[in-house]
Structure formats: C-alpha cells, structure tokens
Length: 152
Image 1 (cartoon, rainbow, N blue to C red):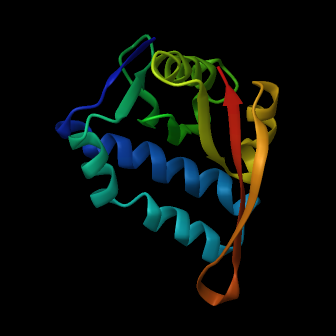
Image 2 (image 1 turned 135 degrees about the horizontal axis):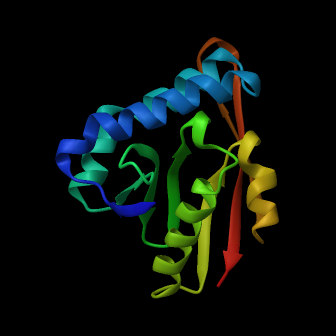
C-alpha cells in the first residue's frame, strides 16, 4: 500500500474513484437531488484545482492500482473516498491516519463534513458532531450532513 500526492496526470483517476464511490454508495442513503449535488461538488474542475494546489492524495494497493483518495486543505479533510471493492479492508483507515498525521503537525483540531454513510466510521475514530447541516438541492431534495471535529 502506498499513499502519495496526486499529480495532474491522475485527475481522471481521482474523479473515477470519487464518482464511482458516490454512485455506488450514496443512492442508498440520499435522494437523487443530493447525489447529483455531491457529483457536481466533486467536479473535474474542483478536483483539478485541488490537485494543482497539492491538496489531493492517492492511495494505491500493493499492485499499484488506485484504491482511494483524500483531500487535505489546512485542517480540513475532504473528498475522502475508497472504491467499494476496497472498503472494509483497511484502506480507508490508512488514508485517514495519513491525513490526521499530516494535519496534526500544524493544527490542534481536524474538521470534516460527514456524509450519512460515513458518520459511524468517524465517530469510531474519535470525531464528534459539531454542527448539523441541511442543503436544499434540485427537485426539493435535501442533503443532510454533519460537521465533525477531532482534537489532536
């Protein structure tokens, strides 16, 4: 397993991990308008900007295949996705530990926005809910998520 900063040539890989995971998992928890909001939020342009700023990391399995991604912006963790076939095998934990270690070098608190399917995972890692958010999306659907924090 290897975690490294993503380069510009890996834009499509990061988009694929992100969109594949959203399309596989989020429709089980959210209405269509919320899923479409997530996909638009993680657009090619937004990913490209984050890669250019050096904020995006890529996780590779032992065979060098892309398995997950995480974005670190100051003390904020975002765009944390592990392809469905790699979930439950320690890849997400490795990515999260990597992000937490990097953030802890400069900050005393980590902040992230938690989707419904990820909230229990974050709680097990010591994050607490600091705020509950609701965004109205297309078709009158709602996207609900928590802002979570962890002191390090």
